[in-house]
Image (cartoon, rainbow, N blue to C red; front, side):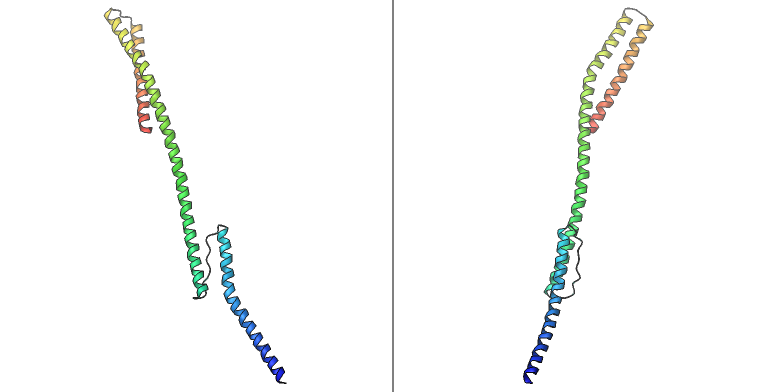
Length: 171
């Protein structure tokens, strides 16, 4: 009869011990499982992970540290995304400025190349007009043609000046 009582007491102690062990194990492993799941989510790129800290013990402290780390990672990732967008925008602007600089250099080169023949045309038309006047030739058709040539050459020179001004603005 005493043996049965001892066996019953041992069985009760084992049952209570198992229940306590299971309860303690669940209390400890549940937050660890939550942390493990959250770490896996972060490794997939989902940085917006937070776990409820239900205790003030080491597991609770670990959970709070994890939450802070996850917030910091999320914030840093957002900052990097913003910086990446700004960098792409700046690269586009730089590329556009480089293109405008090349266009400005080309415009300056073309303007300088056009100025020489335009100056020659203007000078020759003015000299021809002076010669006609000195010689007393009052051929209005010829004088009109020379004046038209001079006027159009002046217009071309103005276009060249505008081109040079443009090249200075873009270069």
